[in-house]
Image 1 (cartoon, rainbow, N blue to C red):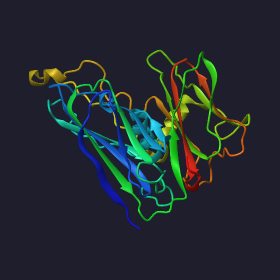
Image 2: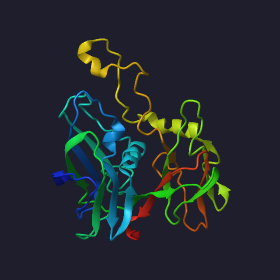
Image 3: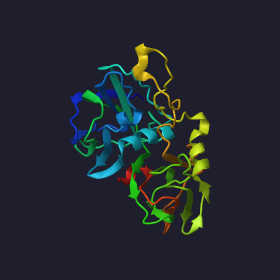
Image 4: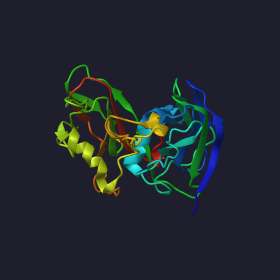
Length: 323
């Protein structure tokens, strides 16, 4: 058994507001790595992490035109953190003009990487497509390039693969709001985004609490609050994501451009507006949300603010079952 890690696209120029597609390899596929490399375009400016990670607005993997992976670039980064403990090792956030920086988006097709029993099965050329949508504005960066790399498992005979597609909704009012989850495949996890989180003197959040109902019966998460669920993101000692820049107050004219009189950063982490609901805690199927044969599988959100929500079910699809 071996794997093949290879380059699909090498330092391709990134153009704002474009959608770029790539034919993916035909061997069983474990995961895809999309690296955005660029140069800082301002001197004496330590750019925010959120500005950098917004360069990609959408990532999709399409099989015969149907999505098996579809989410925003930011959600992709946070999902791989929750599911696989993958955190970028970034460099050169030091405010120097023309410094090279890069960021890698991990697109997993299984809940374990390099796992021959859980990856996307072999396909025919042109059936499996990677599609990347770039933002309309690229922030304080120039000379932006994209590298796309893939990890194939040529000898694998996968039994299943991971499908992650986004359900988007905006409640019309505060209070309980139901998001219908897909029925037919087991769901190992939910990744959730809520626009509003608590701030100074405003203890309001888009996702105040969550329940899971199967045929109108509460399952797994009978009632869990935002605060507890957010803290559970640290299960198994998981790091909370790449923090914002770290600033110190400097009393020297030579570094006046970096002088700060406000609060010391880092403040929040990159996944501050994300929640993770794991069902398959041990990744062994002992606990998992079964949906086959059910009439209704619902994520009930108590919305404290009526603004945008995204829910990403992690479906475990039988490899022989297609998409």
